[in-house]
Length: 444
Image (tube, rainbow, N blue to C red):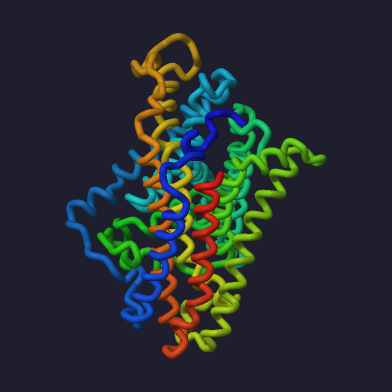
């Protein structure tokens, strides 16, 4: 795998935080939060899309203006076209071509902090939406209907899994051909879906839009049910996640992809990939699928036990057709975000510099369009101590937020006398994920 995909830096294998203190601190934070919530939090406090303080009218007008949306859409198309041209005509070398860095670092990793701060930003810049808008103006192609309910987020889960496979398992993930084939197929599938059902296809089925929207639920900016742009407690946004088919699968892929990413650096797994009779690609694919299945089975088992303990849910509007399986999926989102920040923070800070260096001469013609071609990546921009702190704090904070979100939902769904007891399996789930995440982080 190309060095451009080596998530984090070498210091990740020797973090300046003793494992004992990392585990002890994480478990103490989870236990204190669980006990505190059990004693002090008896009623649900989050109101989903009904909450939020409206921003000033001038700000809302600017955000909702047609000129703003057209500008953002044009920006998305411009960057996508630039990446396409460099992948088509630039050198097939990630050390000289900015396309792999733009895709795996600026887009994939950068989408996390952008969505976390501003909300579902990919919806505004998604180039496929702009292309679909142009195509839908042609006779007979302008459709707008609901995609089948049973489809839900399953295409998004499949798309995320496919992209994760490309990034972490494929033999040549940074090769121009690999990027062109994947995104060519991706664009064809989703443009076909959007032409069949209309723009709502992207909301539910586009992997990157769903990914950005789920992370964006934790953003301080959001929209109320009346459509107004508001400032809100991120927990209200998290509470607004609606259970739907494929939601659990999507969140489990988000969690499992970072888990596999951390495990893939372990010497034992590297040796397994190199010595496996089936070959590294097949073995890596099975390992990735096993990670997704493991995360999903652990979640499903804990939710099943919680439902048995809680006995009778009190609010039917939060119960999906499959019972309570999707009712607590929102509590996994902050955990997934914590893992994403922990694993990719250093990649964004260190390798993100490469995008601006290579973009100055994208076709390797000797030009220096941005004046950055002669610069080098500063790997000392962020020290090992800062990286370790961000990694551990993000994982612990993500799990604590997950405990709070799960507790608030449990006191809403379960009978009062059983709400706390019903949350114990979810607390066990958080502990298991925390131990697993820290183990991969500190022992990889």
